[in-house]
Image (cartoon, rainbow, N blue to C red):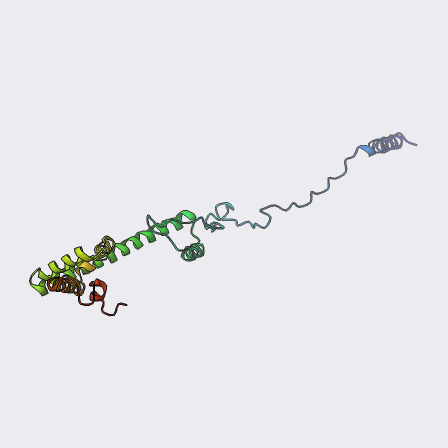
Length: 210
């Protein structure tokens, strides 16, 4: 055997030995980690020309799962059914709690203005009753008789209601009170009592009253 053959055999032997001696030390390939389900597992990349940044304009719902109760301004109490309908509309338009409350505030202001408008219209109508009655009568005689009737026959509670409702300016009501005063004065001039007994103001004002 030549020297080269002997050397080659020796190298081969050494190589084989090295392989045998290191066989137990060779690391096995690592197994791939199983895919983990995360909150973002369903996301899809939306690469952009600027380098794959996600779409910044993605729509995010603003409406909460359920709204807290809203306020509609001082003195405005929303009916439960109306309140639920408002919440449904706010949800439909995807309004946040704050945005929906701003709409509610505006609604409360509109309601307040509408109520004030009605009150002003009623006050103007009551004033017109008084103005028209004065122009019709041309004197305060009927009014004076009505006042005398009020002071003589009506309770404080009734007088309070007359003032609250404004009916004290209503011409036909003033005339009826004046009629009661006239009948009372006639009764007193005859002898202080009516033919049928004590005069009943309710029957004078309302003949059909039982």
